[in-house]
Length: 124
Image 1 (tube, rainbow, N blue to C red):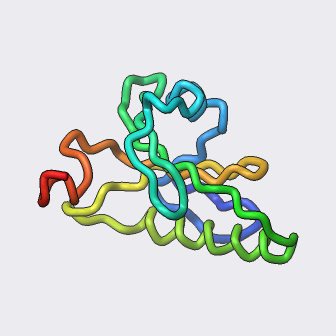
Image 2 (image 1 turned 135 degrees about the horizontal axis):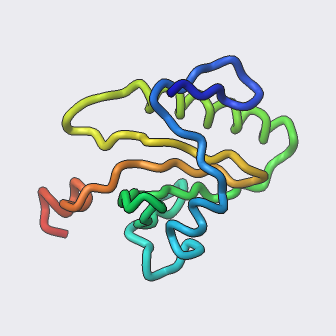
């Protein structure tokens, strides 16, 4: 399935556009019990979609900024989705989809039972 990014002509090959309500349901409203990590750009939650598929949901932090900066950030976010949607390698988790709704910017990845690379390599 090819999905067109909002406000652009970029195609996201193989990525699904999720509604915020789907991801709220999947993560039990982004509950702390489902939180599996946090980085400088957002928190990652374990979720389960209605079809039973387990996913990792990265909810990006909302950054205070002007309208022009927000438009630029949206373009950057959409470009990242387009890039990640095309990236396929056995050592990289696959981007399954995204959500751009209101001020929410969310990426949905396949869930890896083994955990993060740090955990796998260093036992952290």
